[in-house]
Structure formats: structure tokens, C-alpha cells
Amino acid sequence: MGHDLPMVTARELVSVLESLGFQARPMVATGHRRYVHPDGRRTTVPFHAGGDIGRGLLRKILKDIDLSSDKLKELL
Image (tube, rainbow, N blue to C red; front, side, top):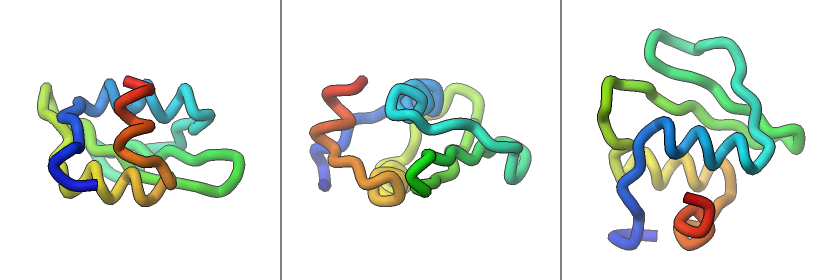
């Protein structure tokens, strides 16, 4: 995973997470939402007005949820 990461918004990422079975948990901090999967995987997604998720953060989220960038692109 490197420069092949797509640029995604928080809403697009949440749509993918929910399609994979992740469920929102109460807010961790203002502007962030925690997502948890029944198998124990979990991640936090920042929500900032209209901004894309940075590539470094997206890489960390994909690692948290054990998802490849190719699979992410398929699900978008």
C-alpha cells in the first residue's frame, strides 16, 4: 500500500466500513467516530467538514481493519 491509495472522504470510508459489517460506537471525541466489527476489529474515523482522509491515516485505518487498498477500491 503506497501511492495506490485512493483519496476518500469520511462518508465514503464509513459506507465501506458499514458494508463490511462495522457498526458505529459512541463518539470518542468531537469530530471522530469509532467503528467496531463483530470479529473484534476496530478503528476510528475523523469527520472534518468536506475533507479527504489523509493517505497516512487511511493506511492506518486499512491496517486496523485488515483491508487491502485494492479491496477498498473495489468497495468504493
